[in-house]
Image (cartoon, rainbow over all chains, first blue to last red; front, side, top):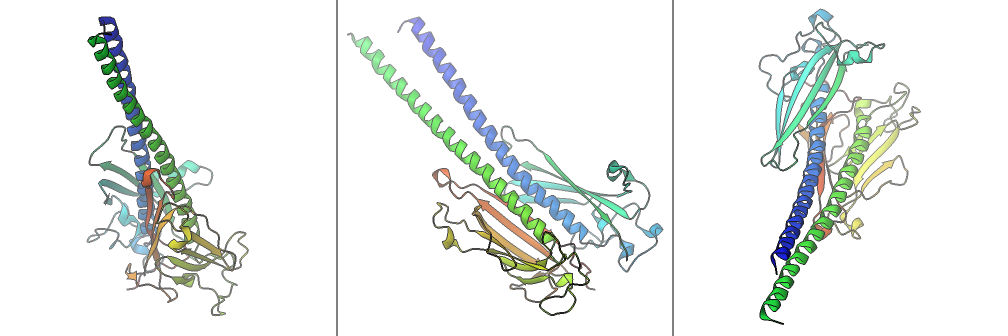
Amino acid sequence: MNTGQSLFAIGALLLLSLTILRVNNNIILTDSMMIDSKFGIIANSIATSLIESATEKFFDANTKEGPCDISALTYPPNKESGETGPDNFDDFDDFNNYPQIDTVGSVVFYSMCKVSYVDPDPDNPTSLDNVVSTRTWNKKLSVSVTWTMNDQTIGFSADTVKQSTIYSYWYF
Amino acid sequence: MGFTTLLDIAGSMIIGGILMMVLWRLSDASTEKTYNNSGELTVQQNLLTLAEMIEFDFRKIGYCNTWNVVMDPRTNQPFISSQAIIYADENSMVFYTDLDPYDGNLDSVRYYLGPLSECTSTPNPRDRILYRVENNDVPVASNLGVTDFRMVYFDVNDDSIPYPVLTRGLIKSIEINLTVENVAAYDEKYSNAFWKQIRLASRNVSRSKTK
């Protein structure tokens, strides 16, 4: 082989190597995205579970025995002393600033809950997103779930799943 | 033909062979990944379809459009929504609700997992069929690759209840575990996805805690 042929051969091998690396990179990226998407499903189930867990509690610490005056509602939304988790939470706003960590395999899911008062206005749908600083008969719980892996791989994106619900108090 | 030429030809054949092997492996890996990724997508879509259906039905346990005039077929007494679950065990549940068109007539819904022997024609040895039965209709099902459908029941104090649950009004919330796998996979490498609803409480079931 003369020098020209050798250079052509080296160039061809280089191109092939780059192509193979690119294909491998794409395969790993796709794998990471599929895994990420799978974790997104689990994150959604964690968020839904937290919301379900919160909505099975009383509306407020002061409505456990029955209706109360609006001025007696807990403000700002917070847990009472001695309450540490959903097992001993007794009302909806105990979930305010409640953090939860779940581990599934090597993936750790971090959840954070926020509870606030909202004042829904039928003429203004965005009112559901506006936190109000007064007591109302409607509380909003927002749950954010994010996750990390011990060994982060190419293309792995730490996403955040957010879900929210509004819990209202009715008395007949 | 000189010795150098022969060496060139032999060297080229070896390098060409290695390149062929690399390309063949690349093609194989690419085929495997394409198959697995589309399988993974199918698994996730199947799981979400099932999770949506189960959540929609389970949330409406005890719902009835005309609850105040409906009689409980078991007792001939006015229907009490908190007692809507008729039967519950690890893999099946039967409950009353009011299905579309929401006409105020109580409908019964039964969910249960079929036996392993039903899916012997699929390569996956673990897949089973999840059935949904409305009233006395023919069971509706399709093989979506369910390998696990397990429920845990809790009372008002969040204590788990042993199976089968026959006492009316005892169940206040349900933990649902659902796992879906491919019914067939490349090289038998089955991918799976799971949904764990830690607590699902129907809006129509009383949630008052006991003292």
